[in-house]
Image (cartoon, rainbow, N blue to C red; front, side, top):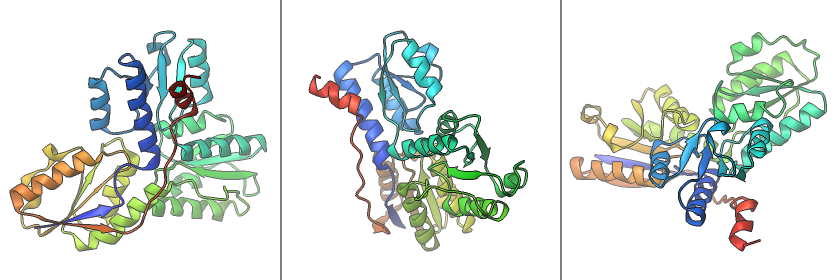
Amino acid sequence: MKIILANPRGFCAGVNMAIQSLEECVKLFGAGIYVYHEIVHNRYVVERFSKQGVTFVDNIEDVPEGSILLYSAHGVSPEIRKQSAARGLQTIDATCPLVTKVHAEAIRYARQQYHIILIGHQGHDEVIGTMGEAPESITLVETAEDVENLPFPPDAKIAYLTQTTLSVEETEVVISKLRQRYPNIESPPKGDICYATTNRQHAVSQLTPQADLVLVLGSQNSSNSRRLQEIASSMDTPAYLIDGVDEIQPDWLNGIDTVLITAGASAPQVVVQECIDYLIENYNAELEEVTTREEHVTFPIPKELRKIQAGT
């Protein structure tokens, strides 16, 4: 058996920054730290921090007054910030800068009296945070069919934004439909789908034709990980989204000569390596890592945390 290991894969700059921020908080403050929502959408990462005494909450009311609260990589709405201030929480904002960019665009378009069409997935943490910036000005769509049902006339003052972790190809279909219906629609100078999402999708598209099976490391609630599995499946190759090696079913590997392994932007390398080790030990697999694009992006930890580190 041969393993093709996709590169780039796994942690993006935003996830690295968020996880490093939480690790630093644990070092500085010990147990008793709270995080609003999961720090990133990955079971392994969340369980690791939970064992260190970190508590993940979905309601600000569940955070004791005066506690330390970290905002996850997905961003939060102004209402959440307001609730945090009312409880006297010491907040550290680990929102991915690329998500912050979308928030800023939403605020700008709303101030300019645009109605904003946000392309994204209902209920996703990132979408909830973005819509909270201008709830009276934003309409969410998921598909081209949703565009058909929009109530705005063709000459309406419209702009669109997107969730950062969407399928590039599927999003282009929705954008094309929006442009057909609203010829004068505005969009940001640079697209919102993040570089890491794009690069991981590109790698899967390029490498899947060489594989008989695709294993995507990532959690079911990770939007970008699900897109990787969907892209591989759309190419008529069996593809599975798994959290770790314990979910691999031996019958998946019957008659398989080549396995492509990749990982969503919130999946750590340790779970990838465990799968590689399993295939090497049990199937005498040989490993080849294939790089389709280079990545050199990094983000600093939040300024609030840097000030605490500096003792200022």
